[in-house]
Length: 188
Image (tube, rainbow, N blue to C red; front, side, top):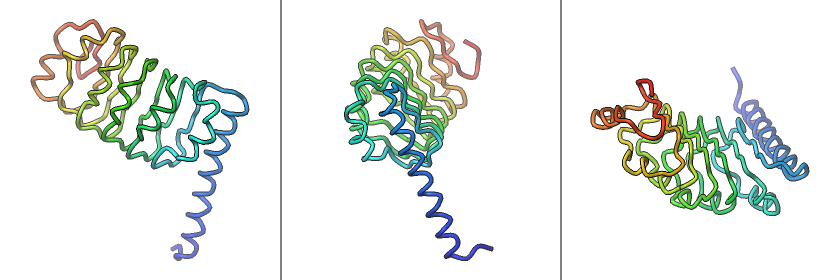
């Protein structure tokens, strides 16, 4: 059995390693001029505010951000107003329940992965993103999907809503033909 002092030291060491890991990945993105920022599996509970300052000079160049498999409960509107050129965003495996309204202002986003989070309501602002081709909401708790709004999205090609407790009206509506593929309990 670990005593509280040993636990505290282990916890502090693990947190320091996590912070150092995030710093290393961010520095590599800045120094190497990468257009990808990968902060997956970093034990993040939110997007670190200090990262905005460090990435200020290169935020326009970043096209892909991966924040998968963290413990994020929320993502700030500042995130979306900072990374305006984002094409792909991977937020799978967190505990998100909603997105800020500023997500609807993303003019270049083509893919968003929200699989295995805690959404109970479809993030409606996604339907305002004209460039969005792929929405992945597999493994959430969404019961209804705004199929009418989705059907007017010009670029949408694929909607993944597998493993969601969709209500019977939504399940029936999913059987209708749409111009995009719907991955649900049945085959598209």
